[in-house]
Amino acid sequence: MLDTIILFVSCCRSSGLSIATSEVLDCMDQLRRIDMLDEKQFKAVLQTNFVKSYRIIPQFEKLYDLFFHQLKKELSETDPDNHFPGRNEIQDFLKNDSPDEADAAVVDFLFDDPNPYLKQMQLIQTISDKQQQAVKSNMGALNLRLSIMLTINQVRSRMANFQGSNHSHQDLAPTLKQLNKRLDMAGQMLRQDTRFDDQHVKVVRSKDSYRKNLGTMPFSSLSPAEILEMRDVVNRLVRKLKDVVGRRYAAMRKGTIDIKKTLRHADKYQGVPMRLIFRNRPPRKGKIVTLCDVSGSVFSAARFMLNLIYSLQEYFTQVKSFVFVSGLTDVTDIFSRQDINTAIETVMNHPDIHYQEYTDYGETLRQFHKHHMDCLTLKTTFILVGDARSNYLNPQAHILEEIRNHCCRMIWLNPEPERFWNTGDSEMRTYSHHCHEVRPCINLNQLMSFIEHLVL
Image (spheres, rainbow, N blue to C red):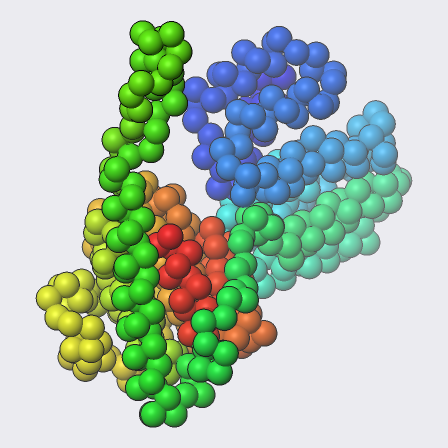
């Protein structure tokens, strides 16, 4: 059993699951205390030790079913005694004719070792930075996926050629049937992408109404006069919100009644609360890190998104603000030193922001990961504002996953109608897997709803 668990752990690690040696030892110790013939108990022990987040439960379920059911089931159904005629000869023939790593991985998968093939699946998900330095396109993963698909077809053809050239009296039909079923399984794994559970991603569709006419108009449809009116409305609403927050914090500074201490003090007076004791817990403000897309595709909404970022500075202990098109620019000092209108104009005319270039979310995330990860803590809310259209460049979604692991909450605001998400060059589906919450933010009502939700 120890060898089986170690092999399963190796497969999990090849698929990207992080499993420490101490967790394997704990798992083995717990398996000794249960009935391992009861699969519910057995699976529960493995999942408890190896799964650290509900988001990777689908991946664990997939690996568990592959390792303990699908591969074993084929053996029992095709040949209960595991006597496959010509199996060793076919294995030697295919291994001697394996020209590259992908081909060898497929052959190993056919003969009960899924580990190399799972490494190929993981490589598709996270193409290394070195492979993307010359060309930042996301075609690397697609090319690898296509290459493995062609490899599967080539292995199938070589198996058919071996059957045709085999002049022995062995009946190879059962063996080839089993191997073809495994090739079908490998192809199905290649087509599926169930790395993360996106059922828990919260998609917030605001229905709040602040202004019936101006509040429901998309930012992209506003005339110059309506833009000026919208700015005044936003400023008034932000001031109103500031007053509400100020009253709330003033009330909280007085404290709330501490029931336990009040009753304990009342024991001196036969249970009569002669003095009320209050908790003195000053409200804790969180930290905010914002990345705002100011490219041409969201230019009409960019000013209002920057207005949103500026308004957040009043309510949090620290706000780090970045804008990007093809690279990252830190505008925190601009927002902290200038008033709102001057700050936004300065950002929109900043010489380091190349508005004429194509939007590159992958490069933006790479620069943030390289230079600014130290501003994230487990009390930080990470807000990314943009339409997720990366012009078919490499999205680098694995960097967003690492950012998520270093912050408390990740929210994506998309200034594009929801019906256009995941169309064309949009990577919204890819990025949403790594977010706690995604929100459409195309008009004033949705913008102010988000500000109230975040602040209050």
